[in-house]
Length: 260
Ligand code: THG
Image 1 (cartoon, rainbow, N blue to C red):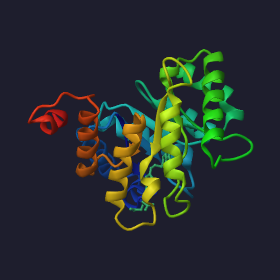
Image 2 (image 1 turned 120 degrees about the horizontal axis):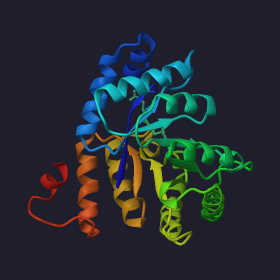
Image 3 (image 1 turned 120 degrees about the vertical axis):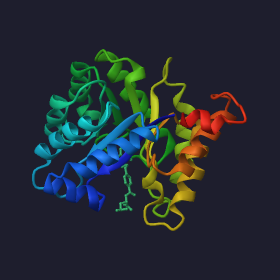
């Protein structure tokens, strides 16, 4: 699994305050702790309703990179914010995300220019699909367009959009089917990612719901997720699932070995 660490997000009050006050301490701490916990990318999101999102994203990227070499995921669907973040980013960035098939040409060109990987939501002008088949249709269209633009499929992350389970209880199960079928889209297939914490928003037992669903979706073929890497039970569940799927070697110390 490619874990994308979710915690540097202005949705959280400590991060929101740190951005507003331009106080790097919280950002540096979260960057280091999430890198140590095994993040492959650190997701950076300035959060909703902020006065200066462009400058704030540049500040977040710069400060995060002072604390760790772990690659960053720039989390914005606005071209202006993405470009500003990319300008100051070092190394292999994850662009998170292209919000619609209609603007994919422009976003794929940007990914190519920066040699970045690109998250694409399965959305087009009709909106967010509520069923399996439209999601797969869009995933195939995304991969086709990205290949045409010259991208490698291994740099594409399809996000079929995970809703809170208390909003529509059918959706999480639909997404498992999308995970299973996405490997048939191309060879090699694109990555498949989701924002795991969306699932449990507004519920009790958030940790348990996230853990159970990560296990199920990894077994269905999910290979990346925006998650709370500081949730050790969640990371242990992911490691154990991958061992049981024969993707990690079993030893009596498999958890310790995976944590390093
Ligand atoms: N797909 C992709 N990227 C994403 C998402 C996605 N990025 C953002 C988001 N969704 C994933 N990250 C989060 C981060 C936090 C929460 C949910 C998803 C979260 N936050 C608390 C809440 O809303 O209850 C904040 C409150 C608090 O604790 O302070 O749950 O889907 N590609």
